[in-house]
Amino acid sequence: MSGLNTGEPVSDEVSAANQAAPVIQLRGLRKSFGDLEVLRGIDLDVVTGQHVVIFGPSGSGKSTMLRSLNMLEQPTAGSLKVDGVEYGPGLPDDREAKRGKVLDLRRTVGMVFQQFNLFPHLTALDNVALPLRSVRGLKGAAAQLKAAEALRRVGLLQRAAHYPQQLSGGQQQRVAIARALAMDPKVMLFDEPTSALDPELVGEVLKTMREVAETGMTMVVVTHELGFAKEIGDLNVFMEDGLVVESGPRGFFENCVSPRAREFILAVR
Amino acid sequence: MNISNYDWGLIWENHGVLLNGLLVALQVSVIALVISIFGGLLLAVMRLSKPPVSWIAVAYINVFRGVPALVSVIWVYFGVALLLGVNFTVFQAGVIALSLLYSAFMAEIFRSALGAIPPGHREAGQALGMRGTRIFFSVVLPQAIKIALPNIGSMFIGMVKDTSTFTVIGLLEVVRVTQNLVSQSFQPFVLYTAAAAIYVLAAFVIDILFRLVEGAYASPPRGAVSRVLRSRKRQRIQQLMAEVGP
Image (cartoon, rainbow over all chains, first blue to last red; front, side):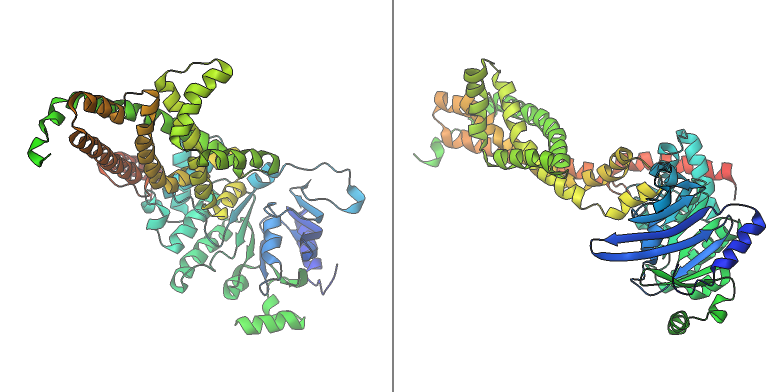
């Protein structure tokens, strides 16, 4: 553990209060691309229902960290436990531990990307229905019904027959959120979900995310929208150079002590 | 010989035979097109795989892209008979020769089309827990086919034209039919003009057909057939909206 991990006791407190193991637990998570070490030992606990906000300068490793939570990046070392199952390389002392299957991990954790990544050859409805059919094994009509319900949740049922290129960026991102939500994940990951949007479209996506948060969904959000972060963040994590510099509960943006975090917050604001 | 000596009526008198030649050319080409689409796709996937497998694809593509259709069909028709004692009909030999060559070209078309799919789409499939094969067939391949379609159309026109070289093994395609008519009538100018017109018209029609297919494959689809299909889809969605409620 390095830096000023002032957030650690708080998440311990919450998990103790819930009498539940954290749904996501990172210990000493490391990731290298060749000689470049992008994550240099990350510890993080996310408990059920918690909204975690991760922010920091570009190149700080926040996206890599988020992407290793569903193994889109394979960690080089350390422990990644989701729902009590180890998916990472593991800590040095538990080499023998059983590893979960990556497919199972990804079926537990939903993800929303910066670039939306809708399938352009499918309608909004089919974008949501395809994984319901091929992963959840729903039949055509049942998958479509569930997909329609998911689109209604994000307020885009009227656009069900539209193709991604016929939708605005904000609408595309909301369909992407519906697509992930429809799979009933235990955790939703958001990788800078508003960074590719025109400024006037940011609001509708944040509104949708706020609504998801209100349902009690466990969320891990990488974002530059500090206003939004301040609003939903139960646990706020400031990263730099592949490390968690400081983390803390609500009020973090006023109360953080590390100079780098303060500097960053001021610069963004 | 002046222009009045040309007997243009010959074309109409023999239009049945000439069109039959075109039919043979199209039959050979269509069968070879289907085979080379599958062959090319397989080669493209091999080409994008890890070294031992990809080398096989690279070797195949580089050899068969370089072989002329004329040489290929002679080799298949006479060479295989000599070497292996297998005697193909001229039709079979034509199909095999074309498929061998155009699989190599299709492989390159599909390789670039597969490479043009943004990696984010694969990642989205992975993040949703879809299996690799499922991502390939439901996410990557449909988009790649869409990108490849115009090039496949051009290739198909090339295939039809390449059947003209199969005259050398006696396949009764357009050029062979023309040669036969010339030997009876001694009107090469008229008859080869007719042959040229047949190829140009065939290419024109093929181009239109492929444009229609491209339209049906576009997102959103264009064209009359897709409009009908889409109106059914829209009805289904109206129905869903009623079921789900506001």
